[in-house]
Length: 320
Length: 320
Image 1 (cartoon, chains in turn orange, green):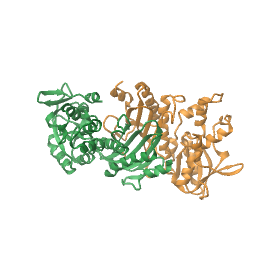
Image 2 (tube, chains in turn orange, yellow):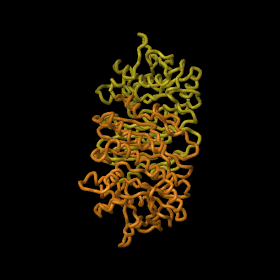
Image 3 (cartoon, one colour):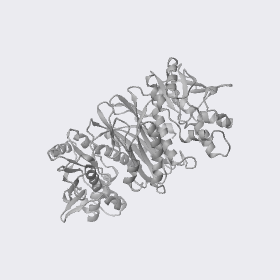
Image 4 (spheres, one colour):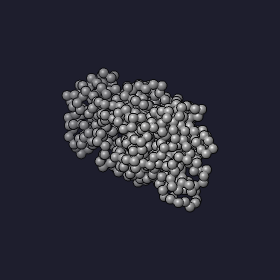
C-alpha cells in the first residue's frame, strides 16, 4: 500500500462536525468557531511502555489512545470535536495493521461525532501513537482543577480499579468471575464526555480525569485549589465482582490504579443535586465520596475504620 | 529532575497570545476565537529517520521540528499562535538534554509570539518529536492547493536547494564557500509565515510549502486544481554560491531536495503586483517561475533549453 492509498484508506468518507471547513488533504485543517471556547490537549502511548500486544490488539491500542485523550477533554468539561494523529510505525508493521489502529480510533470517534482532521505517519523503530484532541465548551465554562471550594462535595463517576483488574486477569493465570467485563474496562474504557458536557449548566465544578489513580488526581485538585480533600474508604465505588481479587490489590488499584478514565470532581453542596441529575440524564453511575476541607498538613486524607491516613500521589509510581 | 520540575523548566513564564485563556497546567489548554478561522496540523520528526545527532544538535532538532509545522501553517496563509508537543525520550537522554529541544522550539516560537500550550513527554527507545500547531486566518482566507486557475503566475519565495546543500556540506568532506550559510539553512530554516499572513488582502492565492521538493509541491497544486503547471528552469531561484556544487546535485536539490520550507504558489496575473508588495513588506525574496496552463498529459513541466520535460513527484523518493 503506498502513501496515497493509505491516506485514502483512513480518510473519513464524510465529516461529522458542522464547524469543519477543510479536513484531511491540504497542509492543515480549517474550522470556524464563534461562540464556544476551544479546548486542546495531546497524549501519547508507546508500545511496551503504555501498552503491549500481549494484552491489546492494535484496534484496542487505537481505541484506548483516543479514549485517554477524550477523557482529558471530559476533565475540562468539553465536548470532543476533532483529533489529529501522529503515529510512528516500525518497518515490520504492515499498512493493513496500521489501519486497524485507525479503526479502533474511528470506532470511538464515531460515538462522539468526532472527525480525524490531520495526521502524520512516519517510520521508526517502535510503535507510538500520539493524538491531539480539540473540543468545545460553552463560553467561560471550561472546568479547572483549581475551582474546588471549602465545603464542596467530592464525587466520582463509575467504579474504580477495574482497568488494573482487567490487566491483572490478562497477565496472571487464574479463574475469575466476569473476566470479559474487567478486560473490556482495560481495553475499551468509556471516557465520561457526555456527563461532563451535561454539567455545563452547573455554575462551578472542579474536574479531573482518573488517568493516574484517584489519589494522584485528588492531590492535583487539592494542590491547584490550595485545599484539603477528605474521602471515605467505604464510599469508594467498585464494581460487583471486584471483591474476588486479593484485598491488598483491591486497595492499590482503586486508589493508585489509574487508567479507568472515570471523572473525579467537586461541587458546592447546593449543586450536588444538579450533578446527580446530569449523571442520571447520561446514564452515568455517580458516587459522593467525601468533602473539601480547609488546608491541612496533607492535601488528601482517606478516612478508614482506623482513622484518617494521608494519601499521597506517589502510590502510583510504586506500582509501576 | 523529576516530572514536576521538568514541566516547570519548560513552562513559559508568561503567555504571548491574547486569545489564550488557560495554558499548560490543567488537563488541556483553552482559548477563545471569535472572528478568525482556526487552522491546525501535526508533523513528526524521528531521530535517525528525519534528523541525526551527527548533523544537528538537540536545539536544532527542536527548532527544525517547529519550523516544519509553522511552514504548514504558512502554506495555509495562517498566522501561527499555539503549539503542543509530544516527545518520546530514550532513557539515556537526560532531562537537561530534553530542555535543549524545548529551547530550540521556544527560540523560534518567540519570533512568532507563539505559545506552548500543551505537551506530553513519554519514555521510549528512540527520540521522536511530534508537534501540533494551531494558527489563525481571517475568516474565509485559508489558502488551498486547489485554488490555482489557468493563466495564474507561479511564484516561489527565497532560494531552492539550500537545505540539501547544507546537509551535503555536513556529511561530505570538502571545502566550500559560505558553509555557515548553507548549514544554517539546513538546521534553522525560516518558514515564510509573515509573508503568508501579509497575503490576506489578496483575493485568491494557491499555496504549498516546499517540504518535499518543488516538483512534488507543484504536482500537488496541479492535481488539487486539475491544471498543469509550467516552470522555467533558468527562472528557479538559487543562492549566490549554489553553483559551487556538482551540476547534477544542483539540479536534484532545487527540484527534489525539499526541506527549504519556502512557499510556492499561484495568483492571478493582475494580483501578482500585490503579492510582490507583500513580499517586499516582509523582506521576502520572491521570484516568478512560470504559469498555470490548461490540463495536459502531465501535471508539471520544466522548460529547459532542450524543450519541456515532465516533472514527477517521485524524484524525491529516488533521492532518499
